[in-house]
Each structure stands twice: as structure tokens, then as C-alpha cells.
Length: 80
Image (cartoon, rainbow, N blue to C red; front, side, top):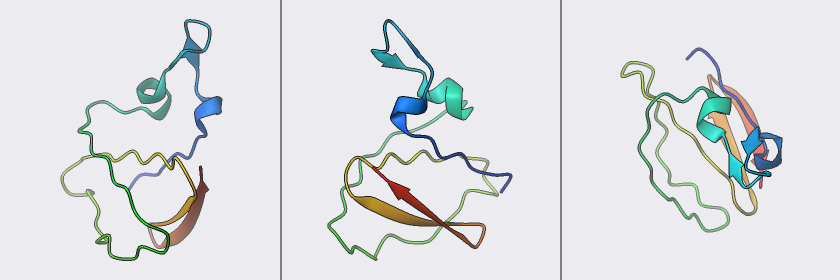
């Protein structure tokens, strides 16, 4: 893994008076798929995985509450 970026939505560059956030450009995302995951508090069953070998990137947006990610063995806490 080369690295990761954590940004709050209000930190993203925007256009059209702030109505459009340039998330892909800000995060350097080139191609992506989209899934919505809704976990209850304390959910611990999301499988650990990485995409180092297939070159895919993942973007997670915490809309409410908080999450704890482990990236390259390091804890990364993220809040909404």
C-alpha cells in the first residue's frame, strides 16, 4: 500500500458555490465502483481485506458515528 488520505467533506475543493465537491480529484481516484455499507454500532464482521495486488482503491465516507480502520497495521480512527 502506498498510502491513504483522510479528508472531511468540508475540506474538499468545490465548484458551483460549494455545491459540488471534487472528491475524486482531491483523493486522486482514477476509477471506482460504488457500494453503500450501513453498519450498526459495534459491528465487527466486515472482513479484513486489501487491494494491494489488484490495484483497486477504496473510498469510505463515514456519514454518522465513527469508524476505526486498520491500514498497513496502523489504526486510523475516522469520525463523521
